[in-house]
Amino acid sequence: MSAIKKAADRLETATRTGIACGGVADLLGPDDIDAAYQVQQLLTQRRLATGARIVGRKIGLTSPAVQRQIGVDRPDFGVLFDDMRYGDGAEIPTGRLLQPKAEAEVAFLLGHDIQDPHDVRDAVTYAYPALEIVDSRIADWRIGITDTVADNASSGVFVIGTTGTPIVAVQPIDVTMTMRRNGEAVSQGTGRDCLGDPLNALAWLAATAIDIGAPLRAGDLVLSGALGPMVPVTAGDVFEAFIAPLGKVTARFSGRTTEP
Image (cartoon, rainbow, N blue to C red; front, side, top):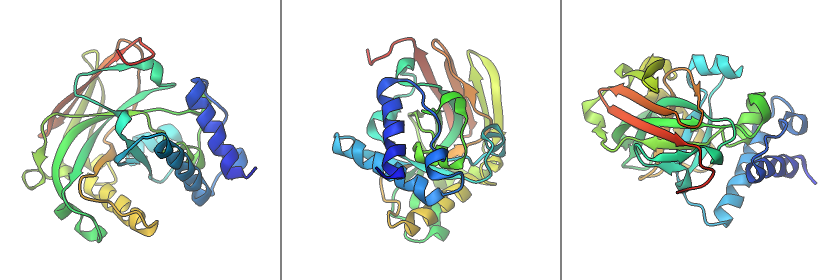
């Protein structure tokens, strides 16, 4: 059994059982990013085979604060599946997640394919406030870069605001963010805290997607990466992200293990 398959099986078992596993760097090595993306791709193929549908991509590790929290020094990306999305204010069953943490982001909706990473702004139609609930199948978040890449960039679920702002009306670099948990401010940041500009993060992803032969397409949703530190989630929490001038988005967490 190859190291790629062993790593994928380990992560898939953790997802299925709800029991966090050890990291996969022991199988892949601490720095083999290509191998880690091969694991991610294998897990993606398995999800697609069960009927899941890809709706976009997520960029991770864009905030210096989050990079310090995780202990890495570069961004990564993962896949967004249709069953990861929840409506604004909808109740999310905490039991489908292992070790959730919330972070506030900008979401971009693409109106055009991106063939040139220098023209990413022209490809965007709307920007939305978003909450990404990151998660890790790896126990205690003891992860390095190969661990998080293999684990679909530590993805969990996400919530997008109901109303988008036309990209022509906003400069993502200038947005300001406050995230509240149960009414208390727990994370703050600006567009500059996301690789200097959320559009820089989008350009990085676009270039990377072109390099691997899977360019971003019209209709894709892209989560920019965090604008500030991520914050742990527990059952019963209500998170609100205020991203000016884009608006507010809310995520509520129940104690249920399944959908209502």
